[in-house]
Length: 260
Ligand SMILES: [Zn+2]
Image (cartoon, rainbow, N blue to C red; front, side):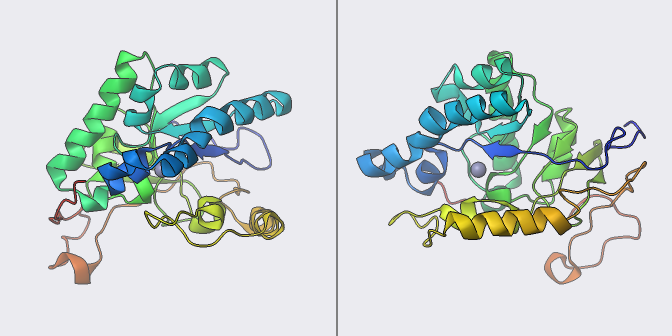
C-alpha cells in the first residue's frame, strides 16, 4: 500500500457513496415480499429512478462517487453496474443477497462474497472495495476482502479517519462509516418488513449532515501521510479467551443462518 497521503495535496477529502440495494434487502427479509407490489415498487425506485437522477446530478457537479451494488442487483439489472462505470464512477461489492454477514456462517459469507465477485467479473466490472450488507461485518469479513484482492472495506466504525486493517490474507484499508452519516436511518420506512419507522424532515437531515461534515474527520480528514495499522481484536467478553498479544485475526463465532 502506498504511503502517500490520502489528501493528495487537498485540504480535505470527502467521499460520496450510494448503496444501490433495490429489492435485495426486502427479499433477504423474506422471499414472499416478491408478491407485495407496493413493496417491490418502493424498492425499485432507487435503481430505476434514483440512480439515473444521481448520475445526472454528479455529471452536473463533476463529482465522482462510489456505488455499492449487491451482486443480486447487478445480475437482475444487467446494464446497471456498467452504466455507473461508464459515467466515470466506481462500482463496489455490497454482498450478493444483501444478507448481513452477522446472520451467516463462515462458509455462507464466503460463498455469498464469491458469488457477487463472479457476477461482477462476468460483467467486466473491476471491483476494488467492499461494504458489508447492513454494515454487518463479521470478524472474518476483512480477511475475505483481502483474499479476493480488494483494496478496501467500508463497513466499520473504529475511527473517524481511514485506517489500515491487517488480516491473515494481507492488509486492507478501512474507510469508516457511521449511522449519522447515512440518510437511510432518516428516511427508511415500510410497514413491513421493518426497515425503519420514522420519516424525518429534509431540513433536519441537512442540518445533521452539514454539522457533521463541519466537524467530523470522516468528511474532513486531517493530514495523515501514513495510515496506522489497526489490528483486529474481538471484544474479550464476546470472544472468550483473550487473543494472543499481536493476534491479527478475529475469533470465528458461529451464527445461525436465517435464510428466507
Ligand atoms: Zn445496503
